[in-house]
Image 1 (cartoon, rainbow, N blue to C red):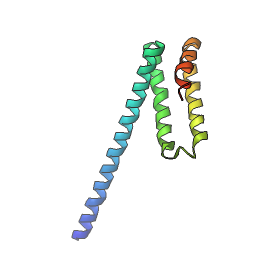
Image 2: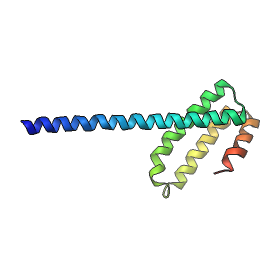
Image 3: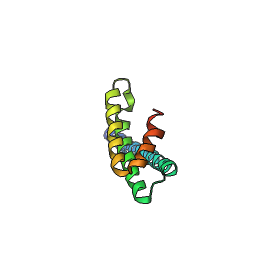
Image 4: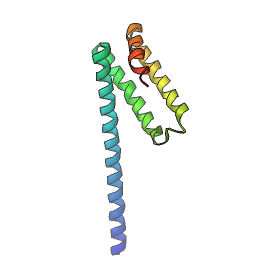
Length: 110
């Protein structure tokens, strides 16, 4: 009986620690997306509505990037695809002039 209780306690402990890791990953993703959106706001001069939309686009990008980042050697095609999706979303959010500045500042560095 003691072994069964110990096993259940251990299983619950593992379950709670896994949830903590998920929360930490979400916080890291949100922080990275927020940082990138604020950086774009400073360099490209976007308004508050655009800032929120850029944040959401980068948040989606970061979630997808986290999934493939463990093995970037085999995922160059996927990385290129998510970069293209991000650029497409940002093209819809930013004006033509802003998007051209974004491409000049951020895509030439990669």
